[in-house]
Image 1 (cartoon, rainbow, N blue to C red):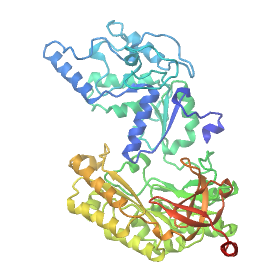
Image 2 (cartoon, rainbow, N blue to C red):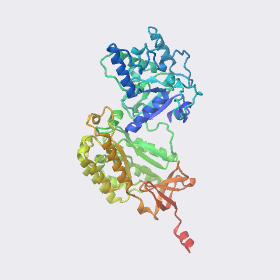
Image 3 (cartoon, rainbow, N blue to C red):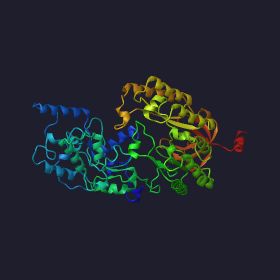
Image 4 (cartoon, rainbow, N blue to C red):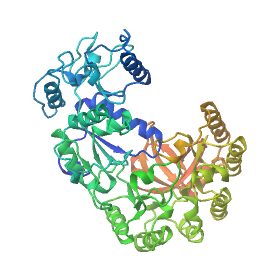
Length: 568
């Protein structure tokens, strides 16, 4: 939203962009993998494969022993595109943004003309450093048209101009202590790479950083507390500068400009950070301790959004249940205030409120109040409540701060008052130390409650977390347990009770995969009906005609009198 207000245009193809902006959320490993892939694609760099690293190590060892280098290793002339002698000046949105870096490296390589820019094999980037793609992609292939990025068959990847990257949000490794206040302004991407190479070459006693960390060294980073300075970061990136914007811990304003992906839905963050210290998670590392927004600020944002035509408010947080514990407030206290001051005053049945993910220990303390909130006609009967494991031993190793029995108390209490309530949960399969008995306890809880939504993850050791240093289970065991949880989840259905019933449905979007309008019931069950844009932003009675695993199909319910006349 800030960039749009500043006049920037968003494009869908990397080839058409002048800068790549990554809104990073790396709580789970797939998101982190995607982050590095996008950075590599934008910067046109690669992290050497494990086999390449081993080959470099063997070559170095052979050279130390006085032997000749194996023929299979790289030659003494560097293949990195950073060693090019091209001296053309960089252009905004032009063909090359690394020219200044190469010019500096070219001057430093005069003593070793065999490798212009990095000083030959000995001074080439170490095994963990980044390598350029441009020259490698050009070998054996004719240069493609500018901007072309299509790859087919076994043809060589197509080279294109690199563009700078700005990573904003939840960033692995944090800011690394390098911030704008620490004189980051004016340092080019080449400077960062040069410093890292120099440190490794000098053997300053520092541990070599991974290729992933080196990727981030080439990107500007905007921390969670500095998201309102995103325009500044992009402008500096376009000048070729790498900056780190962190600053003192503070909550970004809730009134920043934004572009809604869905004009009928407003996502309102109520807090950032968390109170937990889960052994497998990086959320606290990236976002810090809990910081809750004032109730009045959230109310103001919700009120303004509804005035703009929004129909659904989604409250979100790393842990909504912990909201307010840092400011003598609570999640249910906030919800009661919003319902009383905003929703009750408007008295509009088409407006709905959805509560975000809450961890069991904090919700356990507010169960009675939570029941009152979910009984309100403008609140979806939906809750994302992570289990992670049905074993107390595993939960203890995860440092989850609750037991399986406490989780069950929360679920049973809510289902007692709302028998059809949708409770989504998360499961981590194959956590270090998990036994077959632990795994079976997890399966037993899923069988007992038959959760409509189960987010299943195979354990992945996030670097820098305590769980990463624990003894890992064999990958085949982790995969088998994941398959067993998946098979159990797929073995049952949850919406059979809805068939041929009439349900109130709130419509909020159009399907991207089929010609349907999409809505949700009070229990937040997904409903598909033949496309009718007039339904968007409204609520009406729908008759369910078919049920599937993930959704139901419905048609507009006719009034009783009309239906009786039609039957006669």
